[in-house]
Length: 186
Image (cartoon, rainbow, N blue to C red; front, side, top):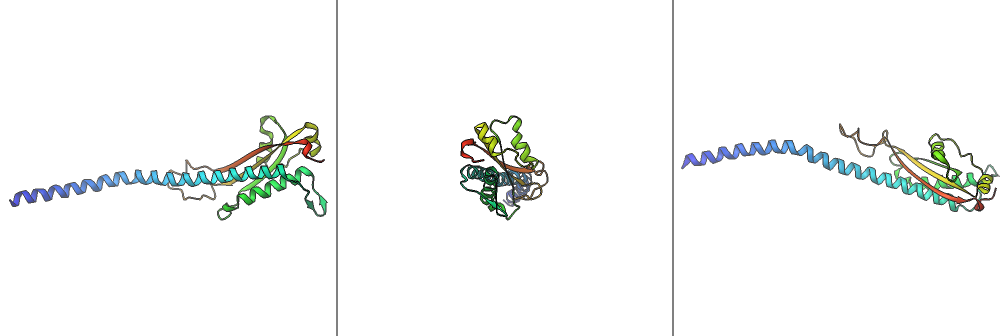
């Protein structure tokens, strides 16, 4: 009878060692899946927040009713709308300020500009060259609002080895809206 008990104890010890090996193999896989799910969920949330802020900035640029004074001098109508768009976009993205402030840019260009010249100009921080008179002549212009967050230097989630290659360097939210030229006073 003693012999059967010893055999069962040995089998249990061998089996518990097999469980430890299986756990050591499977745990990193499950941890990587959990880590990736949480990290990408946070990145996706940030990206949607930037997109929402850009859309709200574009709307603010469309419905901006008044003039802004800089040193007592009225600012051009389009420039005033750009400033309003940047202010609203920055305010909407202010929940990110604890991490790093996103860079907001806004600019006007003729509607239907080929080659995405508005976006390219905003990317190079070139100020908008479209004037209110041009928008009035053309009949309509577009405002482009772009927010950029430097994720590479200010990540919201620490990167594990191997995951840094698949995380984005920048997060961008961008919106466009058409503005009827008759709504602008040159």
